[in-house]
Image (tube, rainbow, N blue to C red; front, side):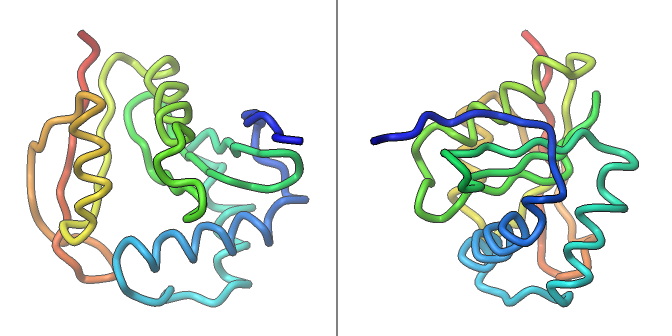
Length: 148
């Protein structure tokens, strides 16, 4: 049976599965291993991220297939399970952030991540700056979406 994708507010019972998915997705996207331990990543997800962002998961059955962390002006994290790229999950999560936004969202993506750039540009984001203010020390791109 094919499970439907549902969005839920982040629940710590999914912490390990979420971090495993996130790390695999990010490594595939940028070709770089995670800089932090799984334990530190779980702490970030459970304790740091929710202080400033709404964190939501996309589930298929009990499997975590995506995560987004956003507030009214910024998307901090958006990762999709590598087996589910191109299936519409990212668009569903991004649309949720757009609906909850102030009408303007900013986000960063890595310059090396051409798939993410095409995705964001397809969904109305425009490049507004380039730089590399990140712990990975990789060139990145600042995008902005403004509600039509």
